[in-house]
Length: 189
Image (cartoon, rainbow, N blue to C red; front, top):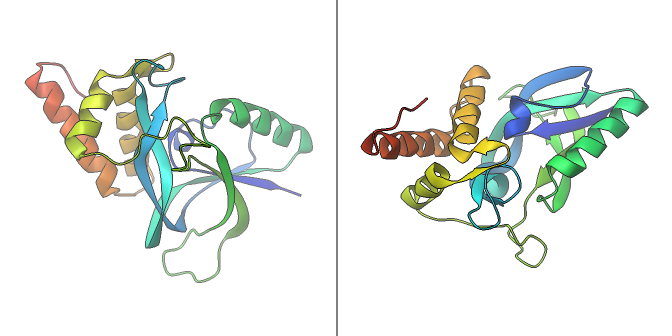
């Protein structure tokens, strides 16, 4: 039986595991937000970066990519990879995945997605909401073993453009980071 994984952050542009098929589409009743702290990839324990998680949002959709993994060996490899990569995400959910905006029937059901919950007891890296400017300042300053936090934001923005998605939260945040960097005289992407 095939396993499906939905990516809404860096998994959109960098799966990091073997897969048989990649579909662009969305899940319903969630929105992407920069509320998860990253102390292992795009920040440090002393100065966490911010990465995306999903927040329940009735009537909204979150675009991304779903990966089909058919072979048992590839499924095990993908799960091993994801359990390390997504270790700061404390929940897994199984969701319906759609490829057509007008569809009432999902293209694929039981697609696994990693979510960083807002429960501080389960997820001590959850940062939660903040003003756009505060999130942008944190992203400008944060850097971790995987690189600068701003690189993550700009790659996400570009990946969403590539799949034809306009995510207002991501666009507004990227523009605010560019504004801050321009005030500091730094080159932007």
